[in-house]
Length: 367
Image (cartoon, helix red, strand yellow):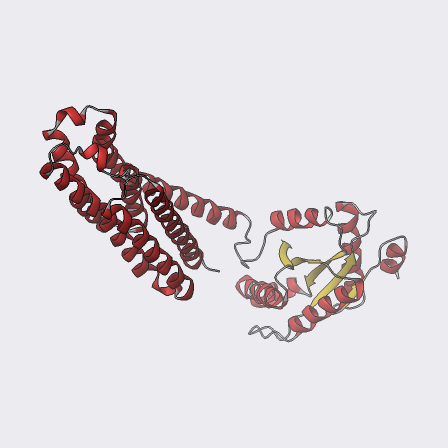
């Protein structure tokens, strides 16, 4: 999965969570108003309608994931209407009806207004978020704030102070701080990406593009911590000095690059190849038995023998292979695979020698 695809999946899950919580909030508000002693028409209509719409948006997103942006916009629009309607309705009711106080009839939606602004700043990209946040504020906050300023007795009551803070300073803080947080998150992502790039460069051989010896040694040591059978293959280009002397080092570099590319293409995802030094390469093969290890080495050996690197007449390599034994140390394993490679060289090159663990290894090498 690419990074954009992963991010789309994350946003989709986040939107599903947002819609689910909004639907749950609407259901809870509906139950509270239905069970309450006073039934106001606005409170009896807005929460259940909002819950039904959010439920429909959840179904639409699950069935049509590519509608994500449209669903987000619809959800935010519904949330704005659900908050703006009671703000204007109850403010006008308090103004026109003697004895009615806004702080007594306005539903407890001030916290939802702050959440709405946060959702706008999170899900709407760029400058559009600021425009939409301002539009939300203009549609919802002014009637409440103006009413409170004109009715100081209600404004200085605990509920009035709560409304004043939510529709004033707190909403401004949300609009300002969330973009700052978004910028910090972007900076952290860029730093993490740069760190990954630097680590990749640190562990990559600059000529061939495969793992360098430093990473190869680390991967090899990790095999000793596993409990599954594994093996290693050491290969060395035959007559490489002659290639350099005859055709020059640039051609020799092309040979190494061709060998590294061909071997990497033939290996499975859990297998790896590292440039061990000069014209030597180490292949690490986890989760395999001796017969399978021998087949892997032979496949690589035949693939290299079929390489065509002009003007070299033929490119071949010698292979030594061995399984990791329970009694092995890092050094003993490398010594044994090196002996196997030496045996392949001694037998004329362009071949594979599989050396079993144990005392017979030295005898095989000398033979």
